[in-house]
Every structure is written in C-alpha cells, then in structure tokens.
Length: 231
Image 1 (cartoon, rainbow, N blue to C red):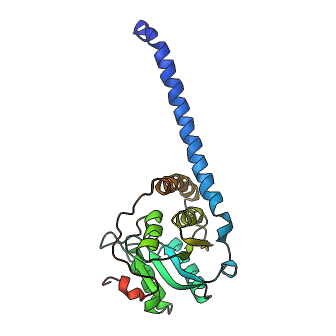
Image 2: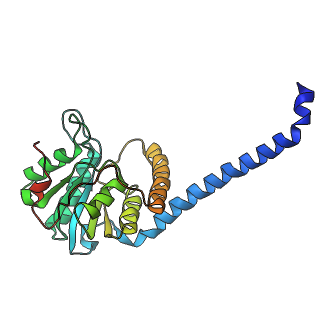
C-alpha cells in the first residue's frame, strides 16, 4: 500500500495544493461578494423615519416567520410597524407586503395585511405579493409585476444591505429603513446565513436570474385589492 501510494505522491501533492487553493479562493470570493453588497448601498440605509427621502411609490414589508396560529413573529411585526411609520409619515403612498404564501396553511402576506387593516390602513393602499419566496424574487416582482420604480424597504439591519443592493441592481430607486425594535434570537446563526445569502444575491444579479413566478402586471398606482386572494 505504501509503495503504491509512494509512486502517486507527486500527484497527491498537486491535487492537495490545487484543492486548498480552490477552497481559499472560494472563501475570498464569498467575502468579496459580501463586501460589494455592503458597500453598494451604505448611503441608502436609514435608522430613523425622518431621515428617509420622501416620494417613494411604496414601502415594502419583506416576509418573515408566521406561527401556526397566524401570529406574526417579532421580526415580521417590527417590519410591518416600521412600514406603517413610513406610510403615516407620508414617505410612501402604498404598502407592498411580500412574503411566502406558497402553501395554503402558511401565509405571511395575509397575516401582515390583516394587521395593517386593523391599524386603519385603507384596503386600496395595501398590495400583496404572495410569491415573495426570497428577497431576490420580491425585488424582481416589485419591478416587473407591480411596476415599482421607487421603493423604501422595511427590514432588519442584517438584511437591509442585501435587499437594497438587489433592488438597486434591478434598476429600482431604493432606500432601506431599519426595523430593529427587538433583540432577536440566534444572532450568530442569522449573520452566518446572511453572508451566504449575500453571495447568492450577488450571483443572482450577475447571472440575471429569474424569479420562480411572475404573472400579469398589477400596477402599484392602482387599487391594492387587485392583488388580494380570498383570505
């Protein structure tokens, strides 16, 4: 066995060298993509509603977990509340709720819609994107289904750079507003996943990826109820 491997040792060393080089190159590229995403939009993200520029066509609530009883997670409720602040301050004319409603028993979009209605938002000002399965799909559909050209994005700090980067890369005039109103669990795991998600976002933009679903146009300038389902 030793003598058999000895004859192949130069090849083994070469494979090990190139394998190690490829691994570190991937690590470098992953870090670089994250830096590109972070730096591309750092001047378009705000902590306070008063700082956000006026005149956007819509403020977007990006989806997050909804529990089995229909209750929104703290993360999602904070996004909805921050979008409400933007809307009530007159910074955006409509609210677009984008979330996962790919299964009948799981529905992020309507959970937020019902909350906004309870808070007194007129039905015609609430648009629902039931196929916002990830951030890239949400931004792509905002542009191509809802025909949005200017957008304020409500989500947490860790998520904002990626969301704004994608929107800007797709030609949307986009700003982000921090929706951090609580301390959230599993912060380290969330940050680790976010780095991978930024790499995917960079690739999606670079490759011109398409969303899982598109569909007919529902202009944000119209009546939001045109985007509702029966729930």
